[in-house]
Image 1 (cartoon, rainbow, N blue to C red):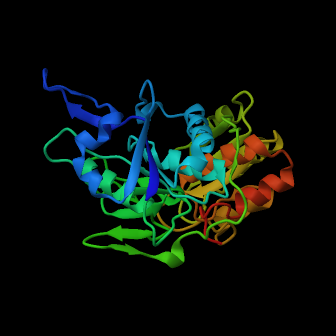
Image 2 (spheres, rainbow, N blue to C red):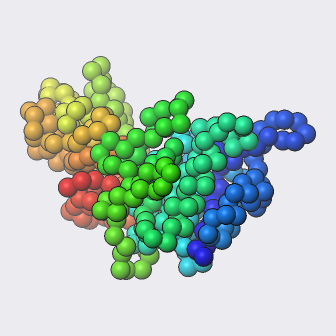
Image 3 (cartoon, rainbow, N blue to C red):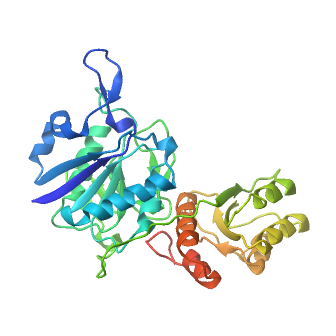
Length: 336
């Protein structure tokens, strides 16, 4: 039988009703078989690890991502797969960060959560946990990557975005189909799943937090750009541009971006759209950006772009290498 570790970081999914007060509280993950006795029917051994204190997803940060990756490294040889219970608000950021920190991952790391607490009569957490563990323990199809399972779909984690705060179908992957769909049976799309690496797991220990995101909008002022560019120690700036990477073409805007690059700040162009990709030079509105050295994120999500830039700038220093890493696929996060 496969050995699966369930890691509870926090979030809505772990809340149950207190028998005395009726209020929702965090449940003890060690009692997972009591909360979900049906798990005993799965053909795997389940162990648990719980953050203390648990962390609301709104408080997720680079330190927690590094803690998670280092913990997985420490126990990697003891388990066949990992399921991380996490709040939904920053789940896509965490999935993206872990995908870059865990190089040559040869085991499934599946992140899941819920829109309703597990302790409510009607909730989505029960099925999300059961399905995630079943996917991680599957003996027929190996999923050697960081994924998000939600509602009834398994997604590559660094391709996802949370798009809904009300319905169970909370996540969207506009540029990458789901890897599996859970119904009466589990239907895998094996041709989309990353191959198992031949090299040993390598876990990185650094993330650069000196990165900012600037969303381009019709009333953006040059002073806004200069203000962001003048953040002390800023090393990377993600531009969320229109459509296929377009931005204003007036000389004042372009001069502000050029000044930013001349400060030694790496500028990364991603689209505001939930699907599609940056094609700098396809329209005149992006040609100048390409010419001055703005890097293309192609069809990467903003969440993955942030995590990737933090990873690359935190572990590499050569400008040419940084450019190549940001513009090329590392963990299935972009389509070339």
